[in-house]
Amino acid sequence: MIHPTAIVDPGARIGRDVQIGPFCVIGADVEIGDGTWIGPHVVIEGPTRIGRDNRIHAFNSLGGPPQDKKYAGQPTELVIGDRNTIREYCTFNRGTVEDAGITRIGNDNWIMAYVHIAHDVTVGNHVIFANAASLAGHCRVDDYAILGGFSLIHQFCQVGAHAFTAMGSVINRDVPPFVTVAGSYAQPHGINSEGLRRRGYDAQRIATIKRAYRTLYKSGLPLAEARAQLAEMAAEAPDVGLMLEFIDRSQRSLVR
Image 1 (tube, rainbow, N blue to C red):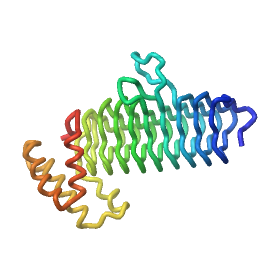
Image 2: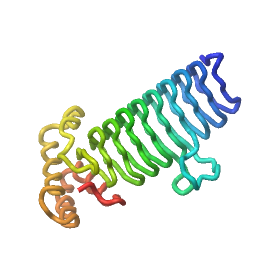
Image 3: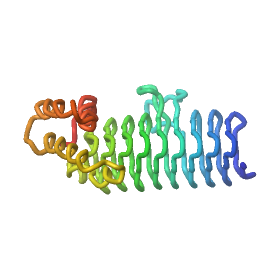
Image 4: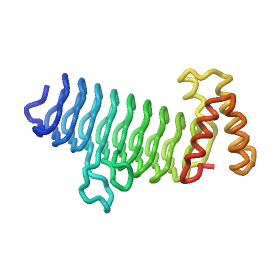
């Protein structure tokens, strides 16, 4: 299942039923899980771990060293989970020792062409990155978030679960769960109601999230007071609890 023009280092570990297309280069200390399909002209450097049943299209460069001038060749990693679709011309870098040393991408993500994921980024599950979305180092994107085309995420920023960034958003602060942002620099524009409906959230659950959004963004309260009100709501609404947990771990302040 390996094309004769592909170059696979003897130190690479290739699972069952893996297909590697023409002119690929697979380096040492690369592990590719069962059932993964790799198109032509893909370069994968190690240490990189790739799980099962991924589809990696042409001209990707995965596991290259971080674009960090302090990097001195330490054995950091890129870890990719299962069942991801990675379209053409994406670049994913390994981590740095200034962080955990791992760039980590979860499961079931849909990553379109020209996406860049920098060193030490953490991506959850079921995330969608539209074309040319770019994440600087140390970012975090939680489950079911959607990044519109050409979204730019500043280093150390976080995007919460089910959040949505519109096309061309420039994000220099943290985007809480469920929130839709747009603009340069990005500003909040309500919640991702349509995305939540598609994922089976009922009207009452969406209404609760909207009420939490109004408390955070429309009440005029300082953040500490808004957080106190959200804490009361969270006792009976786990979705609000998710927003509260995000606020408490925010490091760059909220888009607000």
